[in-house]
Length: 581
Ligand code: ASP
Image (tube, rainbow, N blue to C red; front, side, top):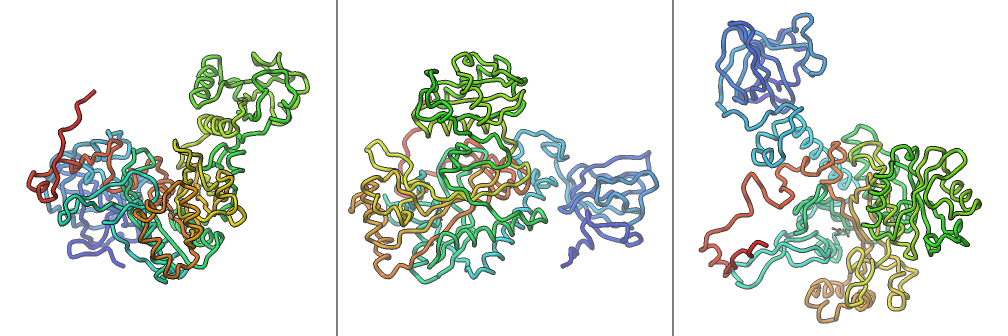
């Protein structure tokens, strides 16, 4: 591969001492211009590979962000002027001739890395923002991840198949974007939340191993880790077990991490959903730090302290936290716990031989010793305890406090991946009393639990699994139901009538009558994976043209009204916007 083109011989950032003596042509943007007296000008020239210092004898009429082509000779920088922070810091280009290829208005913000420009302004001028080294690097990380994933899938016998964007509702459960049909007024396409149904149909079609780096669209509120449109590594395979699917994805994700970081992460550990809830109070446990939830129910089995007379008592230890938490902060923590649904929060500060807490006097010596022992408390620690009959609530409150108090930024190493397996099939019940799918309604129940679908649905485990990295859910997948009889029991359990199932997913159910193989799959959210690998806490930093939190694209100003005649073509009349307030 050569970087040379008709206009340049080299990229700016690639020149080294070995190139001294060569006459080169480089092209790029003027990052900085400094005058040295009247007859010497220094230009820092920037292209995608980095910066190069160019020395011009005489004056030169260029300003920041002008596009120029410079011809000159590579030479050592004079003694004492080398710059160890720059790849090209030992050399410069001398005797330069500068040809202006294009002028530029002053950039709307400074492009150096120290800048702290408002994100809306960066997105409005994204084409300028993208010139920054960090953005260039992020886009390259993204490309490296995609390349590694494609090659891993290819090596494992998967073929890439594109599926339609103009599609029909899919069962992920999020709100969908709809697209009016010009040829069939009153009818709409739906932009796919994922290629879920399309890929299952590919399995019926004998494709055996499918993958796609797929765009997915969900009309949900945006956050640091969520955009309307996002990219998944989507896979589906036939005649597989859960372990097969985890193996395919592990291989691809670890390859991608290695491609970016230069080092292969350890094999990904498995943790059951139940264990993740019990130890971390979350189905996306962040394994980078301790502060695990500790079971205290047996310690207080016969307690006289009313607040601990509950079906579930659990606690966490904040190492060395006693000194950091004065009365004010402890009140805030208690309010936080109550906001999350707890009746209260008990705190205790550990000293050499006492527990310092307003409730200590209600706890027997045995209970105090049991508490210290179970939590492995050391003098100086802060202990936080939550009790309730609702075990799920205790876990989730403490899990959130654990994250609030101990969690490093998501992009900080060490990277800790985890497979969370054995999810429950349902996550509670809706208002009508029907169970709600934890994944989607095509997820296969655990083989041992099928019989409980009707009798005790909430205890049914599923053959579904999530991949988690540093406390972010990277993706999920499942072994699918491929038999019509189990699928209709599933719809029954979900309270979906035969007619409704037929009208929403009829084409899939039809297909299943023509020889559906056992199959399963997964989807990895690439924006999240790439953000973490690139050291970013916000997925917008690894997307070329993201939307703001309010769903606006400041660059194009989309969404915006369209002409009346376009609406008329589509058979659409709009209502006036709702009145504010
Ligand atoms: N379609 C699912 C999702 O997007 C992933 C899967 O089950 O393969 O979450």
